[in-house]
Amino acid sequence: MLRIRGTTYHFRRIVPPALRPTLNQREIWVSLKTGYQSEARKRASLLHARTTELFDETSRALAEGQERQTVPHVRDALKDLHRLLEAPIGIEAIPVPVSRRRPRPQNMRKASAVATTSNPQPLLLSEALTRFVLENPHASADTKKATQRAVELFLQAFGDAPVSIIGGEKAGAFRDLLFSLPASLGKRKSSLTLAEEADRAREDERPTLSGKSVKNHMMRLSALWNQLLQRELVKKNPWTGWSFENGSKTIRRGWSTQELYTLMTGGWPRSSVPESTFRLVTMIGAYSGLRLGEISHLRKEDLQTIDGIPCFVIQPHTDSGWSPKTDAGTRIVPIHSKLIEAGLLTLKDTTDGPYLIPGLNTSKDGVRGTIFGRSFSTMKTRLGLPAEITFHSFRHSVSTQLRNASADIREIWIDRLLGHEATHKSQGTSTYLSGITTANLKQTIEAIAYPDELFRKGWS
Image 1 (cartoon, rainbow, N blue to C red):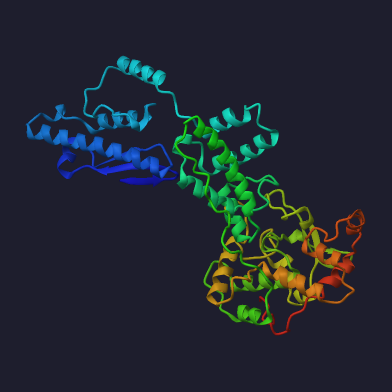
Image 2: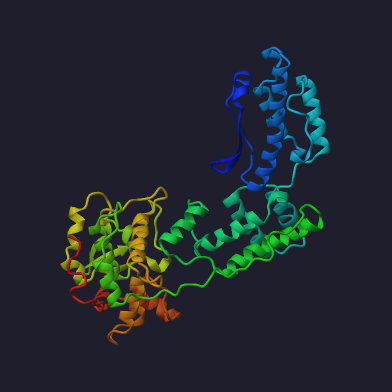
C-alpha cells in the first residue's frame, strides 16, 4: 500500500482484474505529500477506504447492467482523492465519497473559500520558530541564536512540517543524525548535505558532536515545544526523555608491530582500489602521520622541494573545495627517506591526472578516498584486528614514536608535523612556530622507524 519515492510517500493500490476493463487502469498511485511515515499511514488508510467505495460502486453498477459510460471513472475518482489530501481541513474530516457527482467549478471555488476561512493552515516549524522565539521580546539573543541553529539543522535534515505531526520518530532520527555529524560542522562553509557531512565524518574518522552538543540542540527544541504545549498546538513534547550517551566510546590507539605485520601480510579485499595503492597509502600514513583525507587529496604540485628537502605541502585546493581540517593543518611535512627509497618522488612524473596517488576515486561531493576507507575497514575486520585501531591510528603511532624518541626533538616540532595546535599556548610559542626550519622538521620525521621487513614489498 505504501511506497516511497525519494523522500515522499505514495499510496498504491491494485485495481481488481474484473474492474480493469471498465476503469481502464491496472493500479492507482497517489502522492501522499508527506515524508513522515505515521502521517502517510493515516492518509493511506483514508484513501484505501475511498478506493474501496469506488470498487464497490463500480461492481454494483456492472451487476445492475449499467452502461460503461455511466460507471464512475477512476480518473474522476483520483481528482477527488487529490482534492481530499489538499483540503485545509486535512484527513481528520469525513469527505464526500469519491463516486459523488462532481459540482460545477464555480461551486467548488466557493466551497474551497469557505473551508479556507474556517479552517486555518497548520502551524509549520519554521513559523513556530519565528512566532515564539525570534519575535519574542523576552527571549535573549543567545536563546534566539541557539534555537534558530537547532531548528535550521532539523529543517536541513527533514524539511519543514507542521509541528503537530513531528513526533518521537523524527525526534529520534534527528538525535541519531546529530551524533553522526562532525564536531567541526558550521565552522567553515560547506556545500554538503547533513547526510553527506555524516558520511564524510565516518569515512575520515573525524570527531563527531559530543553528547553535550546534541543535548543542547534537543533542549532548545524541547523549550520551543513547551510553549506549543501551553497553547495546545501540540499534544506532547517528543524532545524530552532522551539519553545523550552515544554508547561506550572506543579509545583509539596506535598500531603494535604484530598488528602491522598482520595488516601488511593479509590479502587486500577485492575492490576498485588496487593493492599497490593500498600499500602506497598505508606506507605514507605510517611514515608521515598524515590523515587519510590529506593523503588522498595530495596533488602533484603538493610534492615540492623546500630548502633542498623533498616535502609534502598540505594546503587548500579551492577549485575542488577541499581544505585541511584546521588552520594548523596547512603545513609542510618532509618526506621520510624510506618513502624516497621506495620511489615516491617518481609518482610526480608517472601518475596520470592532477593527483599524486593513483587508483583513488572521487565521490560526488568531491571527497577522495571514500572507497579506500571502506575497503581498509573491511580488511581490518576480516583480519580480526581490534576496533581500537583504524587508519587514523597511524597518527597515534607516529605521535607516540616521536614523543618517545630523542630529547633533541621538541614537542612543538611534532605538533607542527601532525598539524596540531601548539601544545603550549603563548605568544612566544605562536611567534616561534613560524620560525621552525625545514631541517628541524626533517630531523623529526626521520625519527619514525619500523622493522625493515615490514614494508619491504613497497607498492610497486
